[in-house]
Amino acid sequence: MEEELAMLKQFIGQLQELLQNGSHPPSPPSSSSSSPSSFIVLHNPQYHNRWCLPFTEETSADDSCADILMAAGKRPVGIFNMLETVKQPVKRSRKKDKNRGKPSSSSTEGDDGNMDQKIWQEFPHDLFEALVSRLPIPKFFQFRAVCRKWNALIDSDSFSRCCANLPQTIPWFYTITHENVNSGQVYDPSSNKWYHPVIPELPKKTIVLPMASAGGLVCFLDIGHRNFYVSNPLTKSFRELPARSFKVWSRVAVGMTLNGNSTSDGYKVLWVGCEGEYEVYDSLSDVWTKQGTIPSSIKLPVLLNFKSQPVAIRTTLYFMLTDPEGILAYDMVSGRWKQYVIPGPPDLSDHTLAECGERLMLVGLLTKNAATCVCIWELQKMTLLWKEVDRMPNIWCLEFYGKHVRMNCLGNRGCLMMLSLRSRQMNRLITYNAVTREWAKVPGCTVPRGRKRLWIACGTAFHPSPTARA
Image 1 (tube, rainbow, N blue to C red):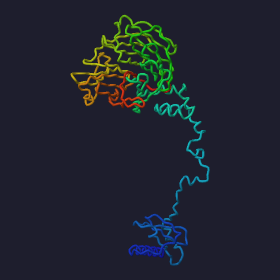
Image 2: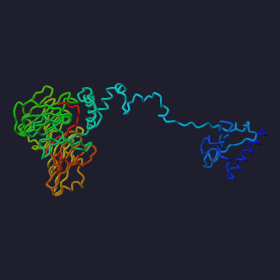
Image 3: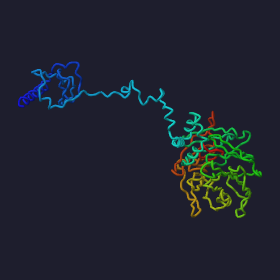
């Protein structure tokens, strides 16, 4: 034991002498491999194992390693048992190298990286429909182009139910511009883009105006008040409603509601004229019913504000009256009419009804002297009075100063409203979110291959639905 300790002391002394003098022994044979820089590797050519001691300097292994020649030419007993044997570091080969020449689990993938069709066949169909139904509308129509099976999803009853159970997205806006009344322009707030759909079945020789919407469907009325049409602007699903029992050539207000959660449960369309005549169309029976006149308890003639579209909350339609000021309501299920006398805010013009979260809202221009601003009111259920809740930022209202501004508002569906503000020197499109109270400017509406920004003559908000059927 004393001999071994003496040899160890001698060995440590030699190492210290090498470090102090900065000299290095002859380089090791080329067969020796490098080791981490924080260790001195001791290599004996007669043995295949290596040992290391801690080394604190940033010195490479080739510069710090030396072949320790043992005086007796034999491996000392006991000395290297005190040192940790370090094995040759194992190189981690890439997964690709490991699997080279062997059948791998990715062998089911094609050269183009697509998964095997057998794997997709085992994907649960209900989960597949749930995922697809949550795609943004533009992405969904790109998705349909993949194959016939995916394209057929739009006619699947289970897929329709899955879409009906989802919360409604922010509405889109189907509009008619003043210089292009024979075709519609659709604005998508999510992508901030305008689309130009074509509904081939709509008559080309007459002006057809969008009047109401429900469940992704838009109700149209020709300018001659002869016929009604219902269509899905996204899928071109179309229906011409049967002729009405009697003709009304005066202006009419049109509202639309669903019988259930989706168009598969049916829908109803109501028109009402100034003299109190009205009819209700039921899509399930495909006939006009409940034709009659408004009861005598409601003042006639009904002076409707035709600039304001009817607003639907559940199965009740609300129309704006001008004389007396207030709201006219009709329940599509019970068939009952109600009138609410509600004075409007002073100095108000171009006001229209809107809806947000089953709350009635009022949007209008408030003008005092030469200043004009857009204001938002909410109807208080307890007092039946309008309470101002928001108004356009002052810096935007300054643009209207001294100008005769006119406004159209599309806010009959959802909490997003589109405002078309115009004068001789100005044409602006703005959206207002009644939930977040955010105002946003909308890019100008131009027809394909056109440069002129057009103002909105009329239109309707609608919730886009790829499964809504007319």
